[in-house]
Image 1 (cartoon, one colour):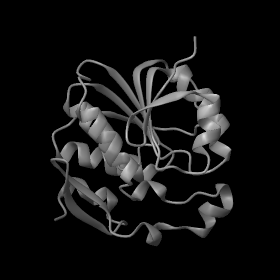
Image 2 (spheres, one colour):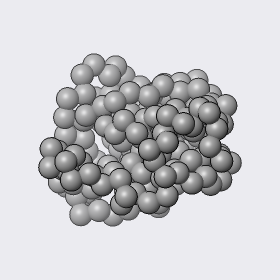
Image 3 (cartoon, helix red, strand yellow):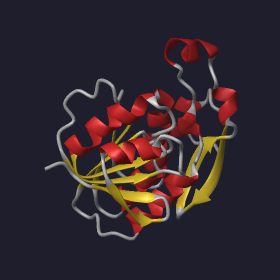
Image 4 (cartoon, one colour):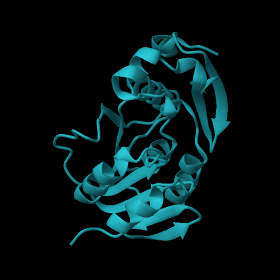
Length: 195
């Protein structure tokens, strides 16, 4: 299973699976990646290591659209399936996460599948200059209350169109009160851009 280019992630127990036409490596068990030290520092948990239903739903919406030639940003990409689908369809993609392992694994998975995309470490609280994008993607990013206000400010400022997938987490309603949206697929929302 392991190839030479995968060895940068040898500290992870990875499994390979086919997902939406991609041969992806992913951690066997996300719980095994929990670090008490990282949690104590910033409540960091390895959410990135799961292929969440919201990521699959968002990936399906992206696959049904013409994104070729668009500049696409994914916030909190985790395993990056929506980014991979957009890049495969011809979009210029910047996939972001705050977990170094997530970004490295996405680079490896992109290379394994012959896809080019960019990655960048990003803390939503201090995003720096990201620029603007034609399309912003985010799947299951409202898992903590502290991100509602942060993302309500960030998302509309970096994109023309924002697609948010959420499984119905408790903080979705508060977010949609700040940034209205319309459901375009089950639990996938197109957010209304600021004017």
